[in-house]
Length: 187
Image 1 (cartoon, rainbow, N blue to C red):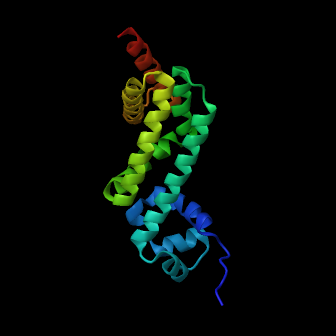
Image 2: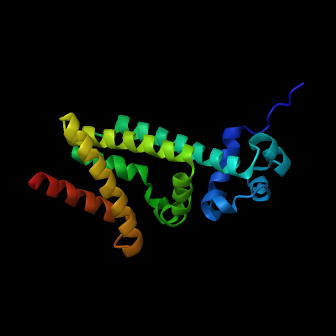
Image 3: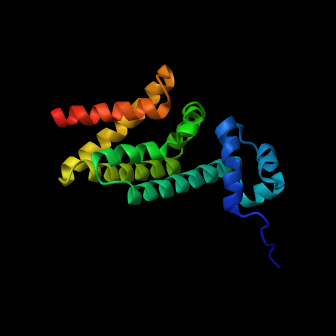
């Protein structure tokens, strides 16, 4: 007779996101995971197989959540250039900027190294560029181009804010995106 799970896979993976963010993918051990989620290391091995499979599962769950946040923002933010800025700011909560900038790079490294995670990132990037492009142009080709450019400016602004700390992350990134929109309209 099969045993019923007391703690769902989703809950386990959600519980392991903070430790993987804090210690990086290489630091997420079964022992640390067991402490974080309340299951034994042996149970985690039974559920996920290897440590690398567990890491992948945690990060795939994070992609699921980001895709859901992106879909919600796309449905709710205005279909205007200003709405594009609000859309991006919404995807990077100000209270998480510091943590996500420093520790998020470890997760990004894993997302790029792992074929399945890389595919999820590529798919999300296309979704993001499309959502931004709809807010920037009614011409399909121009929307695609501008969506990718705005996504690149957003990521660049976030990276440079991490070095310079010129104001809050939201203020600095919003300012760069607004300047980009202004310069784009002048061109």
